[in-house]
Length: 214
Ligand SMILES: C[S@@+](CC[C@H](N)C(=O)[O-])C[C@H]1O[C@@H](n2cnc3c(N)ncnc32)[C@H](O)[C@@H]1O
Image (cartoon, rainbow, N blue to C red):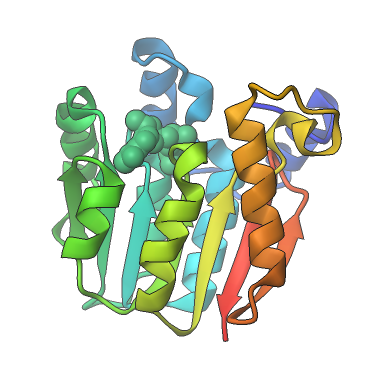
């Protein structure tokens, strides 16, 4: 994962952040031991940020696109209201067993709903008014997720979009065949022009675009 700050600063920041729970620690460790591309996991710093936002927001309905091993879902779930729900969508069916095993150990397991399949197909089948959305999946599909999700976001609802600085490539010369960078840049520009929202691009980790629905 690209970092805007040095390894030393990252470590110092982690040392001055409330440690992740034992369950999150074990999931992060197991992800690094057993999964391909383990650096996709949010990890302790970004996880602490997600849970802080969720606890402040106290959402009734959370939607996540891109579950991976369930780390970020469990961070977000910390802010759910007692009757709240979190729906999370993962396209890779080989991850299902791991995700369900990880969820089963969480105090929020009854509030979590995993959907295996393509988010572009599954989002239209879900009918909650979303208070908090975390998008962290296929970069060329960010535009499509946004089109489907924004009309279903409650007024004042918040979307957090990960990797919008894409290893810093958004400010470099982009190769014509680099579809991911082109897609992310077009998405960021589009949100900046969207009168339905207020947005903040947070230069944290790989860039998190925070979008508030007006
Ligand atoms: C960066 S990882 C998610 C990391 C996770 N949010 C975390 O922080 O621990 C991206 C995940 O999105 C999934 N994904 C990619 N395209 C998808 C799609 N169209 N629908 C649902 N999931 C998708 C990938 O299989 C991968 O597991």
